[in-house]
Amino acid sequence: GMTTIWIAHTTFCSAYVAVVVSSRLRELDMSIEEAAMDLGARPWKVFFLITVPMIAPSLAAGAMMSFALSLDDLVLASFVSGPGSTTLPMEIFSAVRLGVKPEINAVASLILLAVSFATFLAWFFAHRAEEKRKKAMQQAMDETTNPSWK
Image: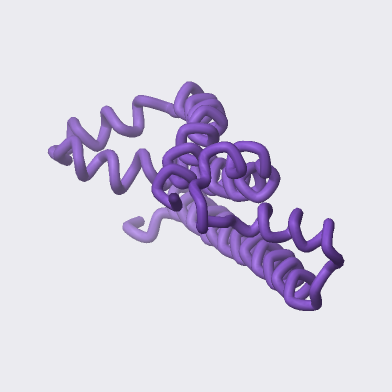
């Protein structure tokens, strides 16, 4: 049924996500986490407020890659699905053999639109965060060169 399909896709995609996230984890600056712990932050707080935001782009990339792999993997879904359970790739494959219905084209268009919108949102928020970071750095530099306490 759907549970076996879900388990199979999770198992299949977790290896790809692990590679992407582990490459980001290897590049993290551990001194930031150590500084937070030195200042009294608990390990869970450090994880959620420091580590997760630093690996968020790799988590998003892994999620998008998993989505694409799951849409592409017709063979895996065919092998593990039971009678009566179907996935979108299986439905599309059977529809192509019998003739494409307008609903299939509509679903494909909606998926393309959703992925495009999610990509734009990811770019927008990353760009906005980068601009805030640059502004804060410039403000900090201005304060160090022209201290107001003189």
